[in-house]
Image (cartoon, rainbow, N blue to C red; front, side, top):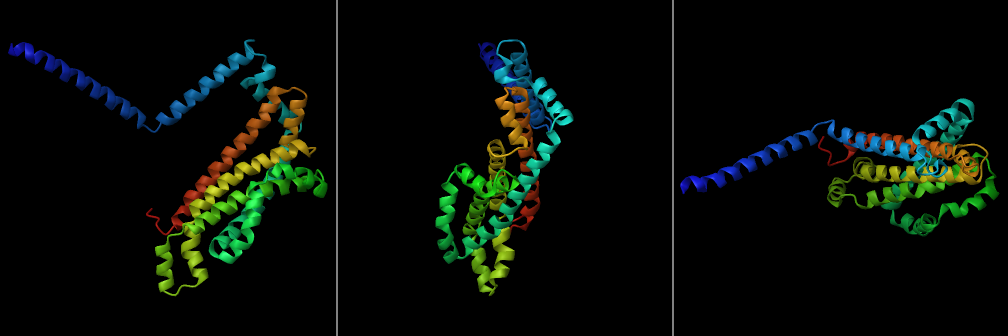
Length: 284
């Protein structure tokens, strides 16, 4: 009887040991540095392979979906035989100029609005109105003012990206640690010293969050502006490709703008990590 009682217990112990070994192997794989890129890359490759098969096998008309090799081919032809470089340079110019002005104005204005209540009370109605107003609805008026040249797209990019940057910066200032401000005031620090050592470093995460949001709005602004009021640019090419049923070329322009957004987001995140050491609570 004792031997029969020990057998199930030994079997259960053996099964639990096997499960523990399997769990340890699984955990060790997921903790490897290559686990995430391997899994993510495999998922992307599987999606592209399925897309390629659907687009070329006749299951779905490629006019509706396009397919990866066709997108790459059309994109290369656009740059080598078409106006790809000109369209890209125009888009980069309008995007960087409008977004740059939004940064230069949005961050200081957000800090000032967050710190000085009278200024905040004066500007808040206008900021709220412009933030909730669809900037695309202003495009006809912007075209009347500035025509279909680069100025109209720069203004649309500026209006699209300004308010995410401004509002995020304002929120960062308003959430500054009050105990740090009290310590600074107890040592009779001036407003400039408080700005330089506490307020600006403390709202760095909020500022870079606003920059990421603003970049997305800026990309939408420049593409939409070029689609409706331009004779050059990636957005203009997307509109022409759509009107002429060139699905692969259209998607090449879409993927180009998506890649630009990803690269811009990575750059902003790297800059945010660098400036994060300015924060008063930074521990290295």
